[in-house]
Length: 167
Image (cartoon, rainbow, N blue to C red; front, side, top):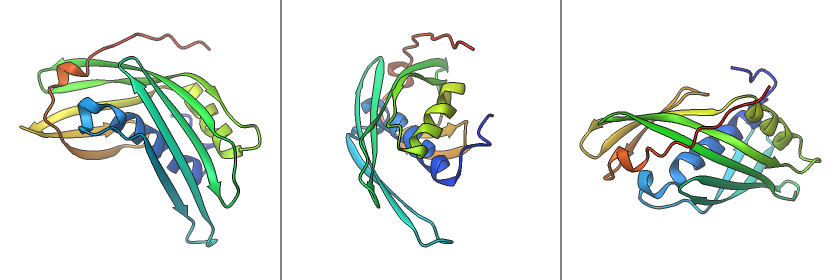
């Protein structure tokens, strides 16, 4: 993984972006996340940063807008992802979210670092059914495990549009 240059705030924002991508799909979470805010508080320095996130998605594309709103108000940075999820078995789906394009505000160093990180690698995910209505989500970039309560079958998620990465 090539994330040595991503600082703590950027790591948290990548995690937020990744979580938003996964939970934005109505077939996974039941309710779509269209707007949320993420607050980062640094216990060492006492500094707080607040980011607002807007999400719109379709079956073959997820668009995410992120902007810092506090301590300084910055313009939105845009991220456009294409999902590629494949059903492995009746109880497992895995795949990636490929950063198709990004339009990042140049003055926002955090968003520039996130865009650079995501251009180097796809965001990986694996969903595994634990029991009826309960699934386990593994986010591969940060090894985060989340338990989800779902009712929709995995076959509704398996719509891969293969992408090739250059470089």
